[in-house]
Length: 156
Image 1 (cartoon, one colour):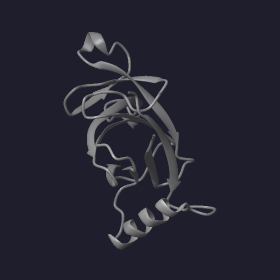
Image 2: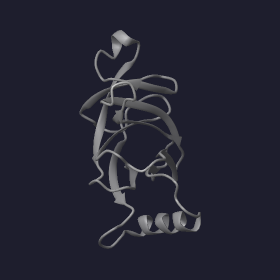
Image 3: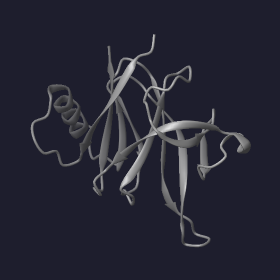
Image 4: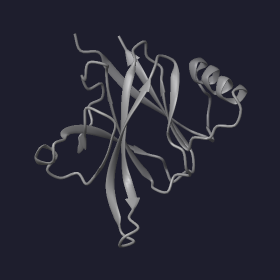
């Protein structure tokens, strides 16, 4: 049976009331000390989740930008992973999540490349011919903030 997952977003500066689970998580994160991650993914489901990200990166060779995907971060139930440790330099971060047997958990529409093992892949074209797998990533608009936390929530 296919489980449904949804995303909840939380910038470092939150406007409006927080739900109790988010408030508890934010409180726990504050007690844990300063947050070093500038983009974190928190798993609020009961399943272990593997996460990959995609973003524009600047290349040193020609001072241009290229799209890059990176993975994997394994995030246990009610845990977070710091997937980007430096200040966000791009507005959009793309996220792909799958369960431990490789089944996608999000319905992303932006096709990018992933690999079964830890990876950094430059470019999004011709995944198969380069020995990679095409996967549907979800676009996350960080609203040009310097820090962002993404919550994966499982639904029954």
